[in-house]
Amino acid sequence: MHNRQQVAEKLALQSGQWYQQGRTCHPEPGEIRKMIEALRWVLLPNFFQPVQPISAVGCINQLHGLLSEQIHRAMFQRCPDKFGTLESVAAADELADHMLEGLPAVQQLLHEDVVETYNGDPAASGYDEVILTYPGLLALMVYRVAHVLWNMEVPLLPRMMTEHAHSLTGIDIHPGATLGNSIMIDHGTGIVIGETTLVGNHVRIYQGVTLGALFFPRDEQGFMVRKTKRHPTVEDGVVLYANATVLGGDTVIGHDSVIGSNAWLTASVPPYSKVLYETESVVHRRSV
Image: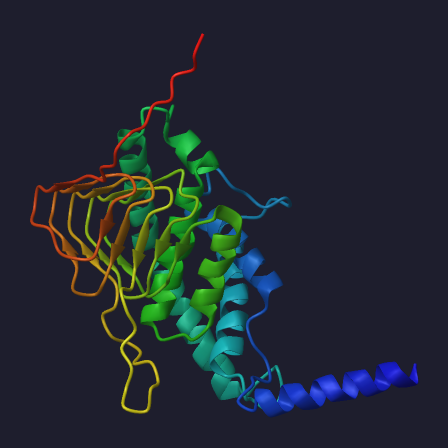
């Protein structure tokens, strides 16, 4: 027991030395999971409902409570205790109200994503299959709510939300990325969309696609320069097939282009382009 006490004290001391800017409280992963589930009740009430039936207003009230608490924990980490002050709690409540007021617009975007996915995938039997089984739609739902919170300058919470969706779906969309209307994500596993990516309307993205940075600029002291345009721009009507990689903040994929599977792009292409990865095929015939 004595050795365990020493280990615990050493770990606490080192943590304090390394993370002096550490938060006294932070958003809670378990509560974020509950919040995402409540978002599904509110945004897709015909398909997802709480185990214990409650009214639509009850769902909204429950979501507001979860949002307000996690926003408070993200924004006011250094309040005297986890309950904060009257002013900080009121500010978090106001931000949660603002988020709720934006949910009808998020629901409209989500509906357009469903329609685009159904129209783009012949394997989809209906909107219900897209909503209930496609991981891309879950990733988009969480991203679209997290993006609103990101634009409200709520720290940490939006990223924790999209990383939870990432863990469930294999789809990594940074909440700072800007995605337009009617996005289709098919299969989805392995997709990475970076913070400063701009994606237009009616864009279709397949598994393994990376919209990433080409390099990371550094200042005179050698530290990375943040908040610069590091990720590509994808214009309207583009199709990005499986495992395509598009890198660089200056890279623009012109509208209505098709980027083939396994293509690697670090330079812009004009509208209506078709980019293909080509390699020699070797066929080994077995002797009979």
